[in-house]
Length: 357
Image 1 (cartoon, rainbow, N blue to C red):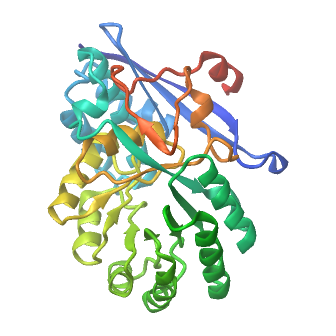
Image 2 (image 1 turned 90 degrees about the vertical axis):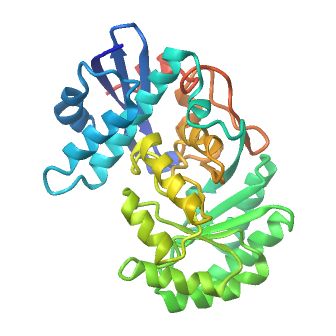
């Protein structure tokens, strides 16, 4: 099997509430082989695929995933380092290569990667209401719980401490005591303030506190928060290298690694991070509420895979429920992994044609 061509299609889809009239560009990729198998994925930079990575992969055996990942990674570091765009593009192509690998041998990716479990829990990532008041946020949390999600996360959008505490209090009341509540702080506080707030959140039994500290001395700040709370400390979503993750775990005491499934280098990159995390008794739950169909394969594969982020289909910040035919499903807050080869997905042709740039 050899890679013959990589085609990229740009889609322009609505992003956010209809009244905002905003759109977002979503590239999707098709990796063609001489055997007729086609691997699919999405994300990254179409220009980097065309100009940098496609020429590197041409003629290669797509099943040699570790080799091809290293070739792309080394090329990205050959001039000033890869940056977010390059790592995300490597991740997108790596996902397509694993899709091809699975299709070539008739196995799903989650099983090829390790197959630790065949169902994973998804959490509702309510990113559409970050600027709402405490009662509105609590209403969002309740709405997502009513969809069947047993784990719900909301985002803090300003540093008002009293408002943050009220959002957590009312959200816990709305959710009840038997479901997981998480918050994303978006790196707003220094370590002292974040630790103080974590102590005040403790009576409301947060499952995790995500990205609680600013990045100037992140590891030291994270350690302060970990020592102050019973909640898990989660973060690292912008960290795309194995070595950056190692620093956050060893120096910061990070308990949930959240490197993005694409920005961390796809399945190949995240599998390396998962092994590192497991050696330190740390969980991994990749960032990417817009990519639950990809994250599910990874989280199912490894023993320390924890949760899959998903922007619920009722929210205006998602695309995953429209992109595929048949539609990708999350039922009862869980994702059941199928036995279909590769990712087990096919793009919806009418949707692609309707949104093609």
